[in-house]
Length: 91
Image 1 (cartoon, rainbow, N blue to C red):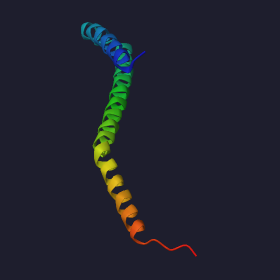
Image 2: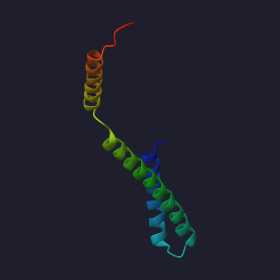
Image 3: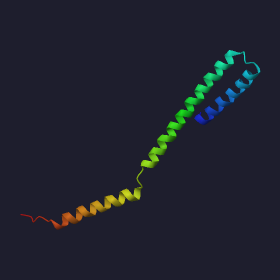
């Protein structure tokens, strides 16, 4: 069960209970149920926000593959060029 589906289901349950509570505000049991559902909704929402923030940070920290590869190629070419100039004669 996806979190979005679970959250939507909880919101629907909460709305039904809230409308029943509006018609009978003395029923404290409904208020307690609504509070418990609100806490579950808040927990799912916070978890989704945290996951979204983590995904955004991962996306920002990615180095484009082309840039990282070209840097490696330049370094390898430089090392090759230096090594080819300093050939040690065999004894």
